[in-house]
Length: 364
Ligand code: NAP
Ligand code: ZN
Image (cartoon, rainbow, N blue to C red; front, side, top):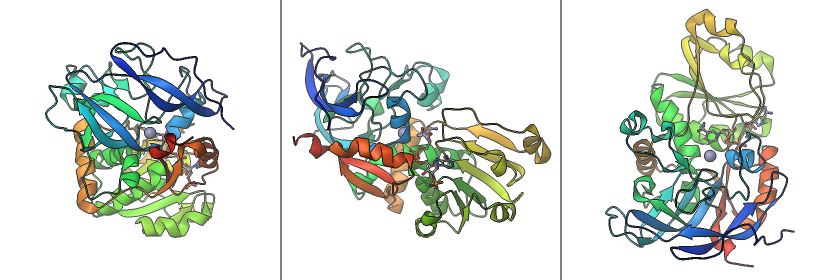
């Protein structure tokens, strides 16, 4: 099926080593086995042997260049969980053998107002885990579809030991991306909260909103996900193509989280917000969404976006998951099935996150 690609990456030299990985050579190529350079850990670095890496829809958007700006070869993956293998001399919070995790960011300037506020995701110099300039090795950063990664200690997270590692990996993106806006918009007991799209992000939003005590309604285009939505913590499920069911909820929501990856009618959800209600987009469909001004001006409703979450909040989310025993519902796959998994993600056929068992990278 897939061929090993060997030519695109610089060969081993001083200060770096080679790691097995999967990469895409172009927007139309499947992911295929390859070897990538990783830097040897410097004093503030942590080297992690990757055990599991979740598959986010952003990986697919990037690999297929749906957002523009993708650089090839592209090694995606930003839901990384593994075991520490080496640490630099200045590292104080991790030691070899510890469980550790890395999400969507691997660096930021640390000094701008966003970083000072603990919102590294908005730092103008934030370096994403993949497809960002790599100041150490040149080229771009390579993500978690790989056997190991080397990351600054400041961007490495602790994973509660009670959590299943395969199910904990997706917390590093799907988890924090949903936890952060729920907290920011004050979701708590007594609030009516909608979650649009029961995918990787959506199912985590349901778990968190339920754990925070809200009344949770799931909006799905997939009638076969109804039972699952209730099991995950929803109080009610609406099949969004059913306009009668939609109308019943008009003007009633405090907050709606929209986690849809494709074009859809966001106005239909704006109509469901009460006065001063907010709908936050975490989904990032490649094409712009049409929004009617009237839906917002009446009832003073607002529409916002949210991007992952800062490092401190990511640790807070992981600790919250440890306390409440929350992980992602995963289908564990070998990396050889990654291209098939992408196709299944496009047809909403994933319950509810693929988690790649990275041990499979070692087998032929
Ligand atoms: P996913 O697992 O593929 O889930 C997306 C869900 O959207 C599907 O399961 C489906 O739910 C619904 N959906 C898909 N196509 C649809 C359509 N044409 N009309 C209506 N609903 C549709 O994707 P994900 O990994 O959760 O990511 C979702 C989006 O969030 C992506 O665009 C991703 O890039 C973005 N994202 C953003 C951030 C951030 O920081 N803001 C972080 C991570 C990901 P139902 O079957 O229930 O309808
Ligand atoms: Zn993601």
